[in-house]
Image: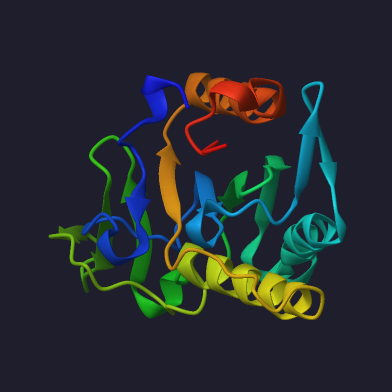
Length: 204
C-alpha cells in the first residue's frame, strides 16, 4: 500500500475523540480477513476473480446502501480483494445528524479542525457555540454501526459456505477531507487488483 495511506487508518476502538462519525462526511474504509487469509477469490493478470464468498461481500456492501436510505449514504469506489475490502462510503445530511431548529439545536462539524460543534439558540435569537464534546447522536446511526452490520451480514452468509471464515476484529478508516484526496483514493481502490503483487496485505 502506498506510503501516503500508511498509518492514517484508525481502529474502531480509537476513533477521533472530537469527530462525530454520524455526521456528513466521506470515509475510506478497509476491513481485513482473519489472519489475512484469502477467502474471497484470486487475482490473475491484474484482475480480481471473486469466488462465492467474494460475491457475498460485494452483494452485502451494495445492500448496505439499500437498507439504510434514512442515512442518505453515498457509495464511492470499492473493491473486494483476496483477503481484504476497500471502499469509500459517505454519510449525508439526515434526520439523525441534523437536529431541527425547533428544538433549538443544530449539529454540525468543523472539518478543518476535525471537531463537531453544537450551536444553541438563546432566547434573544443569538447563536452561542458551546465547546465540542464527545457525545453525539444515536450510536446506531454512524459509521461504526454501518460497518458492524456489513461485517455481520457477510459472516452469516460466508459461514454457510466456509465455517472457518472470519474478519479481523476491527476496521480501519480514513476521513476524506477534500476532492483531491477523494480522487487519489478512488484511483488507488480501482488500481488495487493490478498492484496486488506489491500490496501491503499480500503475504503470499
